[in-house]
Amino acid sequence: MRRARPSSRRLLRLTAAALLVAASLGAALPAHARSLLDYVGQCVPFARAASGIQIYGDAWTWWDQADGKYDRGHRPKVGAVIVFTKTDRLRLGHVAVVSRVVEKRVLMLTHANWSRQNGERGHAEQDVTLYDVSPHNDWSVVKVWFRDSDGLGGSIYPVEGFIYGKGRSAAELTSRDPDYVGALIDAYVPDAGR
Image 1 (tube, rainbow, N blue to C red):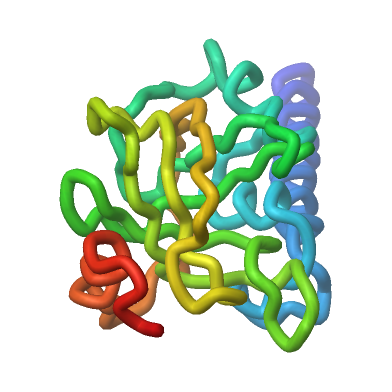
Image 2: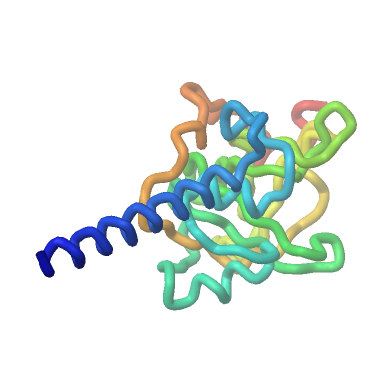
């Protein structure tokens, strides 16, 4: 009889832990969001839900919080979270998830709360072009596609690096047929779409 109690307690703890994980993932996206791409809100809950990386707090704090919990580096990998540095323009920083690596200086990311859609911020965007403009190709400074200007924005953003998750990223992270050619044109042919 004594053996049954620890098993029951262990089962209860495992069930409680599973419910907490499910609740935290479900809480990351609003109930009305049918999919990851229906999300409207801040970049942090979106990146957490899309990547599986369980870090909380403002985007600029993610890099330091990941130390010792997740691998970090300066090479893009699908499913990794890129952490933008806190600046005057990005007062809380920004986080986004790598959806495709196109070539050594161009990748695509999926994120929320960057461009305006229908006049409001917060919407999710899939397979957005990100261009490494660092002098040493180390992803320390980047330009990001900005829907408002229909091209790479004129701003250059400093980046801390990439946080690599331990699990699987969301299935909707990338589209079936991303526009690789468009991403390369965005990066290497300024004002091509205008």
